[in-house]
Length: 341
Ligand SMILES: [Zn+2]
Image (cartoon, rainbow, N blue to C red; front, side):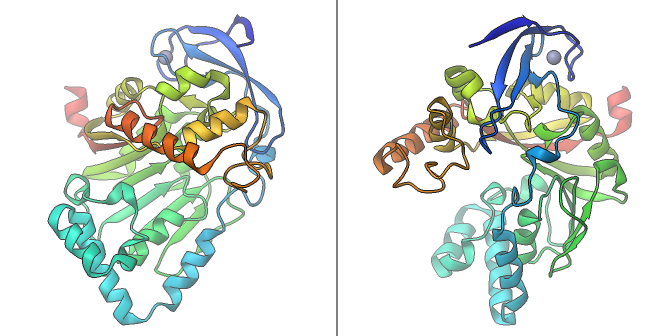
């Protein structure tokens, strides 16, 4: 690791002192630009020390998945019978357990688009189909469209980097803007790999608290410091300089969330083989977008399918031990009076 002087300034999460800075390079797009990161000496959160004046260069057009357009077209064209069957399957998958197994046996192809982070989480999220859902940093709205295809109807998203406002079929509205521009009341606020991109994640959590109805739920999926961070450090693929500005440990995130008025309901790791093949590629100097990248062309990649399967198995083991490199947190909004007490 290339060491620099101790980082100036204080932690953006707990205001603690910062440890030694190190250099990480932009390797997703293959630009190679260098950035300074450091870990907080108190809470351990790894953070970007010197953000660029503008991030536009790091979120080029096409950064967001085009799969969203295909999903929107499919929803718009689906016959009503299929739509009804998909709703039934979705309700069963949301319940989880035996109902989900039966639904999958009955119509497995209708279960394919159901989001994995939602399966069996209906009760914990207190989620019904008339729930008001906000997705923060939603990109082109893939997660919201998935929910729409299973019958959820009150769906809104906000994203600072989309080209403009988007109206998808199924009543999905996406606003180009920052979180403070959102008004209204929601039953569920979600951050799917967006919180780590934000300049002030604790302020974003407080804003989510203000937007949630009493008893509302918060779902946060973020990269977390685990085995992959310790193994790969500046080449850890989910450091993703400079887009990822804050990388929390599980404990540090739960402390920050508690400070913003949230109590945890569940934590699970949902990492995959990506943490290994992505980080190994960075060590070899192969960008995620390179023609030699595993995700672009497995045949041109230095890894064999057997190797990637082995990494997927390792990821499962790490997830079971809560050591995977990303996690899904479900939290409950705590009333203001309780926080003050
Ligand atoms: Zn800290």
